[in-house]
Image 1 (tube, protein in one colour):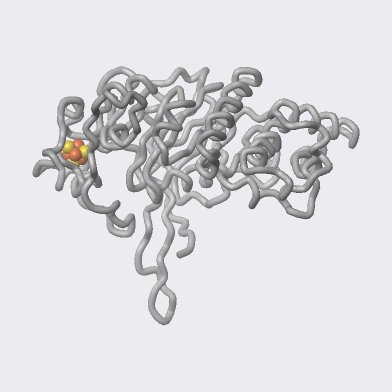
Image 2 (cartoon, rainbow, N blue to C red):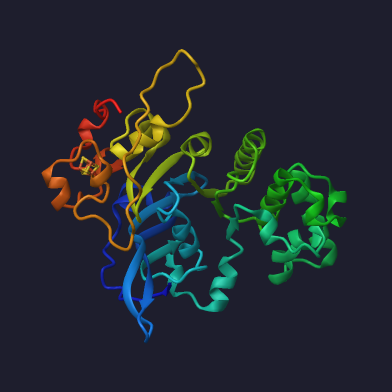
Amino acid sequence: MSDVQLDNTQVSALSPQAQQSDDTATLLEVRNLKKYFSVKGGLLRRTVAYVKAVDDVSFAVRKGETLGLVGESGCGKTTVGRTLLRLEQATAGEVLFDGRNVLTFSGSAMKALRRDLQIIFQDPYSSLDPRVHIGESVAEGLTIHGIGDREERVQKVREALIKVGLHPSHMQRFPHEFSGGQRQRIGIARALVMNPRLIVADEPVSALDVSVQSQVLNLMRTLQHEFGMAYLFIAHNLSVVEHISDRVAVMYLGKIVELADRKGLFTSPRHPYTKALISAIPVPNPRARRQRIILQGDVPSPLNPPSGCRFHPRCWMARAICREVEPTFEEKVPGHWSACHFSEEVIDSLPARQ
Ligand code: SF4
């Protein structure tokens, strides 16, 4: 597969998510973002199809908030994060940071923006050079951007390591001398040292033990309170997202199907897919009962998504209209958006016993 650059003509005016958010509080706004990968075939290696990894996605991240972006593996959530950071080239759409479309930025403008926009990877080990001391790795962004002299950079790295719960003496160690949780703290320190305004955290705890996960999540929350940065928190695990997010967007097969504040989403889901994901979260109280909804079938291929509502082959609420008409992503109640023809019925509906 390779990237494809298509037209940008389908970019609409202000996205619904941005309309409903307070403009002064919006830090990042993604409008009608698409990322298609071309599939080559035949002797001449011509494009024979497109994988629509991200297909017309719009949302906004407000200053200082955490927006969780959740969905099954392969739904396109990681591609959203990589595309808005320009680690992938967008096929169409806009990504506005402080009102400016970063997809049109030159190399130097993008380099300057990277001070404000940082990323934390799922596997921090792969982003750390095994031959380089941690102090140097954490200082890398400062060095690239020419921030401070050597002494000032060392001081900033010391402070960042302390903030993430490590010791300044760790600066002289190599990545292999740390545990998984400590490496993720180093990944956070690398982002933090730049004093960013938005961090895209791509599955930052999914490779960690459960006991370590909550420590890292609590650390991220604490740092957010202290420094005021926003997070776009990408994860496949809804319970992790629930722990840290102010609002949550749910993706399915390249599209956002529901977006709401945390409480609204978890207590009154308005899309059957969200309801199924919530039903899979373990309940801590053994006496509490919740019917687990087991979705039938696999996620369809984004090469050839189903007609109408993409979720219809797996949806227990599907009716004839769902196979033919794609539901609009719209605000059902203030602040709560969903793409389902029968969203008001979701709360009470359950599949037949499985
Ligand atoms: Fe299910 Fe129809 Fe709603 Fe899609 S539109 S989620 S198929 S009820």
